[in-house]
Image (cartoon, rainbow, N blue to C red; front, side, top):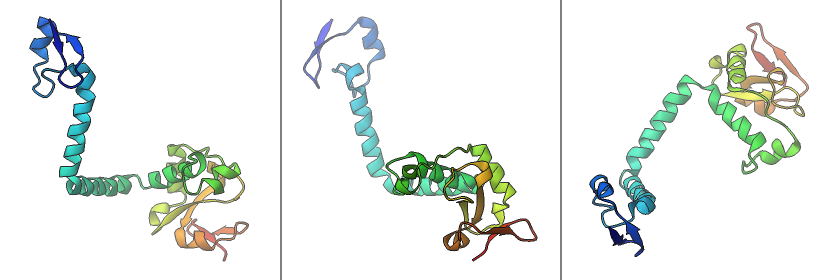
Length: 167
């Protein structure tokens, strides 16, 4: 049986089996396999507009819980973006200068616990040698305030094994 689509006015063939399975009222009278994506996008956009505040609250709550369980991931993804994503605001200072990101998530996790970053209020990833890549042997986590004041050729550890910058 041949019908004409109500959306695009093109002919399409309908078998007796497909009518039985394609009785969706949104796509009834249309060549549904072509227009399914259009209806899904319209419905998704409508849902997002109706539930914008709920979705924002859910996203914020999820991010807090996720970052609380794996706090090193925030630093990992941002450091990686600085080196690999030309759209990143700081790419010209890292990837644009030839700094490469050579660490895995597991390396970041090991480094997090090695530097006892869970004791820091605002941990920040730091490269000991500013001109070398992000690699396990060249990186440490330090307090963000110290990172802002640091001079790149001076680092030492305190009696607890945490890294401290000489300022």
